[in-house]
Image: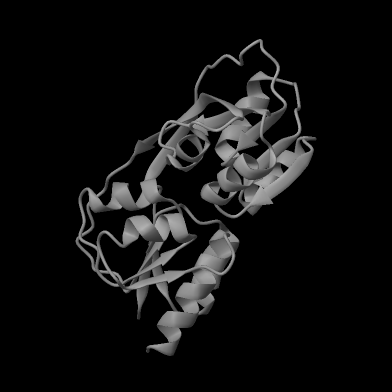
Amino acid sequence: MKSVLSTKILTTAQQHLLLNAGLGFVHYNAIETKPIGFEIPKKPFDYYIFTSKNAVKSYVNQYADKKPCFCVGEKTKEFLELNGFEIIQQFKYAADLAAYITEHYKDTSFLFLSGNLRKEDIPRLCENKTLELKEVVTYETAFNPKSFEQDFDGLLFYSPSGVQSFTKQNKVKGTCFCIGETTATEAKKHTNKIKIATKQTIENVLVQAIKHLKQND
């Protein structure tokens, strides 16, 4: 029986997708996130930026103000809407968001609610532009490294930090199934056997793994 390792604990429904396809699996949380205390500047900003659901969770636990916002990812957008935020625009990747606002929102102020391990795309692309960007870290991500003696046919990754955590104590063998291009970029440091999900959801990562591994029985 072929097997996969998920670097995130799967729900019962997600586990059944793998089991019904005849795949064995091991799952664990390669990273752990926790909200931290933070302060929003008193100066008003025109828009907020969220690139993860964790940042939204941390923010709404401490603040009630709901500015119009830009976001990255479907899950982030869904959670923002659930909490009453107005979404101006959603992007698949942070670099696309940064490129868009630097082109179309000159002389505008943004508050970027981020995590401690966020990528440099937004700060780098917005640097030296006419818009104003202030960043506040709202949650922390910590690695949860674990060593596996078993080899897996597929490795399921949902974030660059998940790849980093896994590779601290393991070699990458088998095919990597990644939730998006940013995660795949990190995985490419360790292998060229990579498949990227067509939608940025855990379920689609599972579907891609099932399709590929069953086709190559």
